[in-house]
Image 1 (spheres, protein in one colour):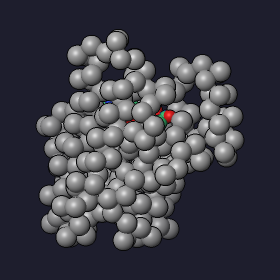
Image 2 (cartoon, helix red, strand yellow):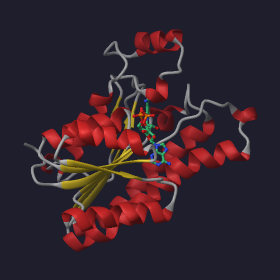
Image 3 (tube, helix red, strand yellow):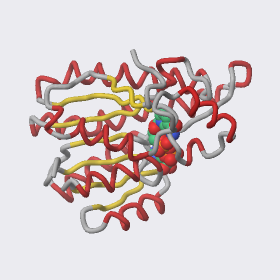
Image 4 (cartoon, helix red, strand yellow):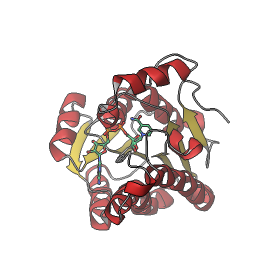
Length: 245
Ligand SMILES: NC(=O)c1ccc[n+]([C@@H]2O[C@H](COP(=O)([O-])OP(=O)(O)OC[C@H]3O[C@@H](n4cnc5c(N)ncnc54)[C@H](O)[C@@H]3O)[C@@H](O)[C@H]2O)c1
């Protein structure tokens, strides 16, 4: 098992990638705190995982909520070895349609939320002289967003930068911080996309299919495992070849 005995927080655990990651990490030996603003969904994920998981409510855009989840994890397990931050929101509005409230919601959850949860877990990781943080950006950060709007693309570009900024500052404590940029993945987030849009993507993806949540969960497992001990500040593109640098 790749992460036996490790303890970590998975955000966005009620659905999609966060749910897939919670199960995978537990199968690989970790204790998982499944956190999501959709509390019942997080509880359902934890129930599916079994004895190695607990669930809690987290509004990642709220400082006190992030601090509470970090505290709960330490109270229950004594440490925080990893954070895998899948919580996120999507919006496809174009330039002229984006009002302040749309901008603020996307930036508050995706970018400010990523900062707040990293800030909340950092003291424990610094104290332990060990930690693994994986943030989730998007292919939209690389290509400007084709389905996602400019505010979504910008929020995810910010996430990539945030991972590098934390990596630079936490490396001395053996805390690695990386981000994953998924391509189009079948989940609740993309359920509203038209069949035509999905088919168009499939035609342009060299590996010929949309991603599954498990494709991203596997990449996150690699980054939080000791196989990736000397990787930090990196952005990993996981997209079937739709984009590579
Ligand atoms: N699905 C895709 O094609 C795709 C592509 C690139 C990037 N991403 C990113 O991957 C991540 C996971 O997406 P997914 O496809 O699993 O989507 P999803 O909608 O299935 O899951 C997102 C989860 O985040 C939770 N969430 C939303 N706001 C929250 C908040 N304020 N606090 C805590 N939790 C909150 C939701 O309740 C949900 O359970 C997101 O950050 C998304 O932006 C997704």
